[in-house]
Image (cartoon, rainbow over all chains, first blue to last red; front, top):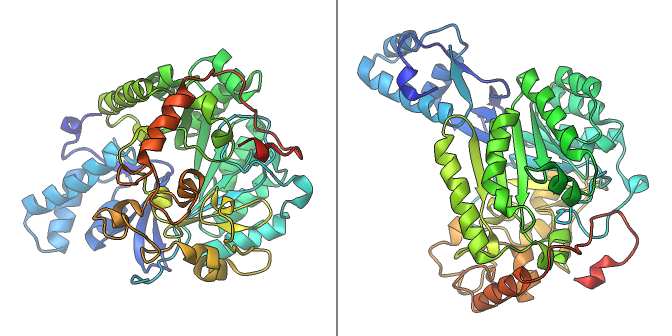
Length: 95
Length: 370
């Protein structure tokens, strides 16, 4: 899978063994994966909660642009930056 | 210490020292407690519950070979129930398909499978177990077919270093999402066997570059975590990401330690999770606090701009190579003893590969041979 195939139609999902957890000790959301964890900010949680393989990248961007009353292009850049990193780390895939 | 102590994120649970393999670079201590001294199922369950309560995210079930414990399934199920991300670190030997399927159903999250080489004969010779290589291929297939993430771990030394990059190809074929290529770190059995394991500088550099080239070639297919060859490095590793900073180990008998080798440092007092809570062992045991932060450092570490990056390297290595656990790790080129490292590496890499001492549970005093 190259990043070029990752289009607005792609439906991203977290791979098996990668999951979101609300950490009650650190009082934040974390993404758990083999030998790694990432502390997530609010928008990252919003993005990843939508990565269930049923929602397209375009739809995620629209949703969040609306929710945060933000420019669509800016939101798309942030969403792609997060998801591209997770694709490289073998934490995410897409349909 | 200036920074408040953060909750630990990882716990390495050494469930047992028993293992069917006898790798000469094993990180377990030279003198190992046998089955009779191991903690019970209930004791381990209580410790895992406490770990989750104090903020541990990842539980790494290791050993020895964790499948040597008959209660492995019960322990994995318990870890999953208390919300720990549960990782099985295994040689594969001792796992059966029904047990693996039961572990999956119980909530196991990830398997880390060791390989000794990319070739059967050499791999089985290094591990001291005939048929081990074939068994690992079988286990890798179960894991990959289940969809669970698989990490392959390969320890690199002179007997397999020519195939370091090939092991990355092999891991891709096995369906691994991640590979750890770990050049041997010289503690425990590896320190005992250093003269048989040490590659030449040229071998190390060639292998390192070849593995880095694979990392780029396989980008997005497999994640390569590369542990550099210490003795040929300019700066020391950030051992354990800092002593007592993020993770801890629990030994088969309940001792709570900052790392595998911490007990080799004389005079440090570590506590036991059978007697005290994990929270106390983590926050208050004198051994953990001895090298936390940077206040314990001497020069050249104390004024070094890298002190919060590599934490002065490794305390156990400073003890083993400089005779002082609070000295700068001699791997560092700023250490006054650094020149000795090159001399040791050059001398040891000229020895024969054959003749290493295989790791075993024994009462014989091998420690005296170091």
